[in-house]
Length: 312
Image (cartoon, rainbow, N blue to C red; front, side, top):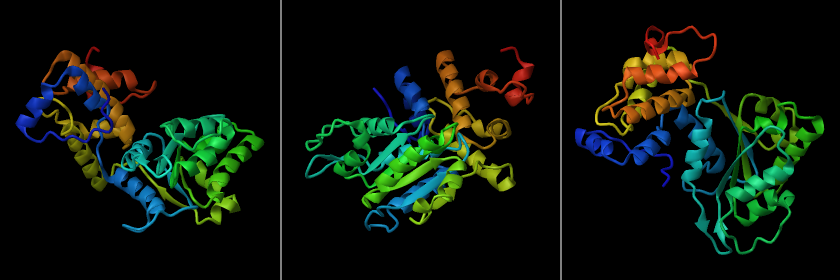
């Protein structure tokens, strides 16, 4: 059993009691796949939507390229996964269609690997697919699956991370081949180096490249208020009998994560698993201490959740 991107909210005592009585495996998956819409998420999701479907109720915008830019662990991958989940595969006249395809780039990725990942994402049976060469899967498969938007997560790995010039050129060629069909748009998701690469390439810049920059929530009063609300929203989705009062530890969470949702969820998941093992009614501060103790960067002297004053 797998629960994907769970957005189940437990608001009442009765809801929480029922959640706490679910089989432990289901509760574990609810924690693992907990999904919370929040300020940065909304900005990123809207950036993808406006590239793909710029007019509400209108047609997909095809043959254009955009960027979703932000530092690691600020929630970009979660946004991509949510967008794909809201645009699932469908039955078409010639087979299964995938309106939105998302693949992850990796260091030293080759054109063949790009094709293989497109193939794996669209692996449902498709009556008219006949090619067996993965080099051709990227464009051919996207067209036959009627894909409107290709999202490439961690796209900086296509062009950087010790790539040789010819290798980066090959990856540029993959993206350009997709765009040249004028039937598929591309969203490049990753860090700020993507903008540096794209703005040096007329073939991308001339296609109206537009980018949205995501930043972690800062320590300004306004952002800290949003960050506290985010912790409360996470709390409402945890399958425990009582609230864990995560917002009480707002400053510790923010100091550790620097406002990045991915790092917050790392601590919450680890602490949640510990609470399940201890069969407590909620996540306790000692669970947070034990979780962060294993994750803190060497040399970081901050006393998150007071873990240094306790024996782990």
